[in-house]
Length: 287
Image 1: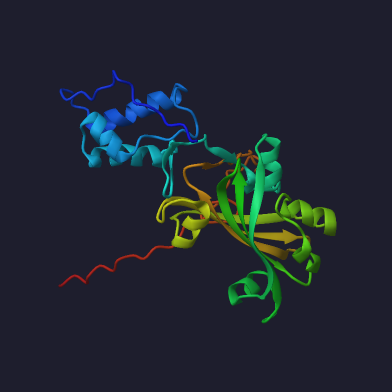
Image 2: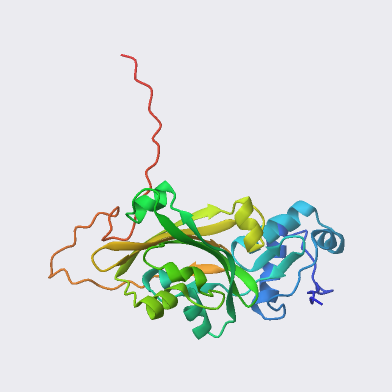
């Protein structure tokens, strides 16, 4: 049975304060969570309970909970309610080839993958182009939900040329890292990857697998990995829970031999890519 938190009897919203009710409620929740009195995984009172106990409107409750969710202190589980969230996980794999399973297992978490698909298909046009394959070439598609401590963490889809790794169809990837499997079985040596991170919202399908509400904030990652000789061998995209993920980037000083670096932000060297945006055309001025 899931344990629920309780609102202290001595907690009252201050009607004389200039501080809005929702913010007072939010600060109380933060105090209880950060002090450790409310533990990870405990269920919060329902919206209707909070409205009744504190004599406040549902709008006040929702605004306080929404801000706590967006800041990663509270998570929602579809059909179950709101819960005290686990701390955000630092994901440093954007500059490392260590697989998710290896990284999290080293930190002491229970990790496993729900394999949704592991099959051979004809490469879609976009995938064939990215992996430099001929039209109608076959690829192995692997779709998984990666779990930490029995809770969904992110959803990924990998595309790999079938001719290069045909036996991959038979590999059990429930507890294994894909990169580790490729390394051990095929002697793969990845030279580099290029990864793009966007902020988006979960669509209906992603929400089902991640057990979140449709439209919740997520990180969307797209990646192409290469072997020696600039041979692309893997393309993947993944969707990470916004409330539980935090990407960590380590910056290293580059030796420019005393010269001032002249790197455009929108370049591979900078690591920052600027999305094009549509400019609104100004109406021509009348003379």
